[in-house]
Length: 412
Image (cartoon, rainbow, N blue to C red; front, top):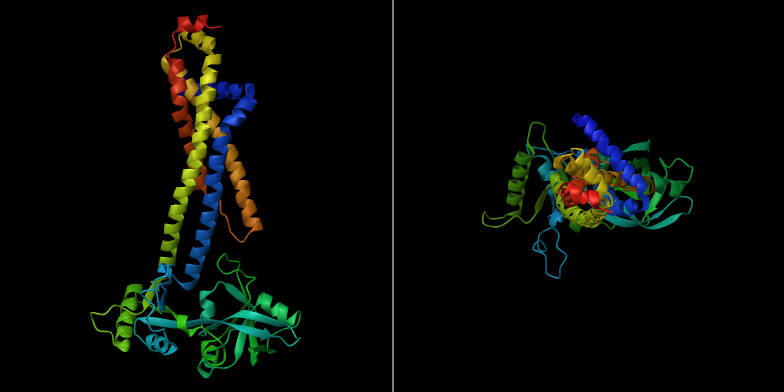
């Protein structure tokens, strides 16, 4: 008998046994279903979030880096005064100085605050997020203008009171009216709307958020903005590497701030890649916990596999005796029961994949989390289930293969 024929026969016998004991088999594979389903849904969620993060990094440019007062990727939440607490704030004047460096292509300022917004129809909204930016801010955000355009560099230089609204905010303030060219008031100050920007759906920047983008010079002069946390997005000059730009920025800024060689930097340069590295560290721990939980579920399922296979061996003692009497070797008996155990767990894995995949689709449709089903997760789940079946079915299969055919034939 060829190898394929033996596999086919083993599968058919295993399926017959499952059909003969549906309820018992269902309870046995429940742990496998839970374990595989958990791996499936969690890997889909993590992959979706990682994809969104990568999209944000790609939008800003993989070589971009941020000048900030402190490294916001390494914030500690404790009662101690942070080491960066005495760092001076980054200023717009420093951003303009850095923009003229040979290895720096762009230096885009970002400063945030809140404002009370009043529209022409009497609609008034409290504490709306205002983002003060350079004119190139839209190059680092995924989305599109649906009306008007962005403010210009000249608007930033002259601190003109102009604003770009996000789509939802424009609808709330103006309804069906075209907002471009109309006035709104931010903390009582008149601003002219020049454009409407609709961000792409993103887990880290929901399109439903209400934002107003204004020139940073205007924000610093007329609005309540938090210039303590002013940041600068820096883009290397074409032909320059990220490291060259970072080294030049660090050296120039240390010189401007009068830092001696022995003194540490009183600012932070944060690579875009650091966000991904931090995410990978967090999800690494998350995956370990997830695998631990799914392993417990698989262990429960594995104990069930051992139990059902031991029962199956006892119930089929005479069958084993007959097969051995007809010339079946120990390896063939061992193979048969191992294959039955693997079939049991693979069926559980398939059910877990279907359930986990369905939940992943539900998460993607019903929440902002863009869960993505990974091919490697499917392959890993099936392989893990097959290996678990072999491991947990090994003892019952070994016991079946070691039976004395004479004793087995006498079994009632």
